[in-house]
Picture (cartoon, rainbow, N blue to C red):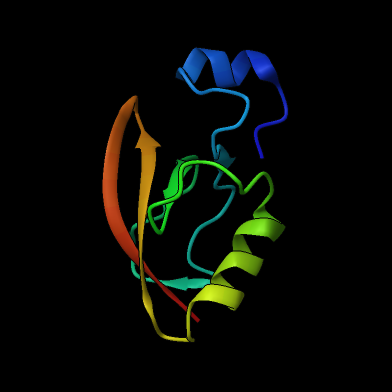
Length: 88
C-alpha cells in the first residue's frame, strides 16, 4: 500500500481508496496489465477495501478461481488504464 498520505493526496485518492504501488510485475499474474510503478486503484470493480497487497491476493484467492480473468484499473503516468490480469 502507499504508506504516505501525501502521496495519496498527490494522486487524488482518498484514505479509503485502493492504492497499491506495483513494485515488480509478472510474478503472481499472467498478462501485462500491471507494470512496475503502476498504482492499482480498482480490482474486480472494487475501489476500496483492499489496503495491502496481502489483502489483494486474499481477495483473488477467495473470489476468483485460478486462471480467472480479473478486471483492474491502474494509475500509470497520471492516467487511469484499464486492463485484465489472470490469477495464477
